Amino acid sequence: MKRKITTNEIINAAIFILDQQGLEKVTLKNIATELNIKSPSLYNHIKSLDDILLQTARRSLENLYNNLVKSIIGLEKEKALLALSDTYRAFFKSHPGQYSLTQKVALWNKNNFSVSKSDEILQLVERILVGYNIKDENAIHFIRVWRSYMHGFLLLETNESFGLDTDIDESFTYGLKLLIGSLKE
Image (cartoon, rainbow, N blue to C red; front, top):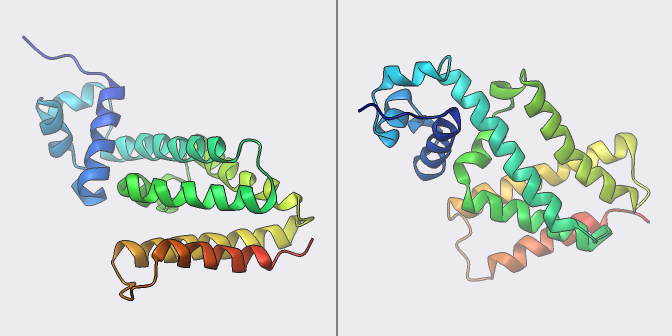
């Protein structure tokens, strides 16, 4: 008896592989193996591996966005930026493959939903910055610096590049407070 699968199961399998083994291991063969089917069966539901990656990026951006929104409900300014950053960091640690895929903008930037969800993530930070009277170009500059700090810190942390005994969580918060301190009220 043939096993029936859905597109949702394919995306779930891709996300599982992505988070467990990394983007390079998300292949049609590995997805089929995870689903206990033959690779050609995937084509009944998807067009190509690129199609799977687009749909997986879409889901990953949605997952990140939903986590970030929940973290800042009812918070403003510093508390909101700290909560958002902590949640972003937790997402990176819990879902390294999904995070990595969200950073591959060239891969998903032609997908309207993914671009829209990415914009919504940036708008979360913009809304927090409005409390500091920061908008327009200055908001963009701050967001770029914040994203650079987050990405760089997370990569260094994951690669175990912080060898000193000083608490990494404290260093993370220290850096964020420096950035937040640069916001003039």
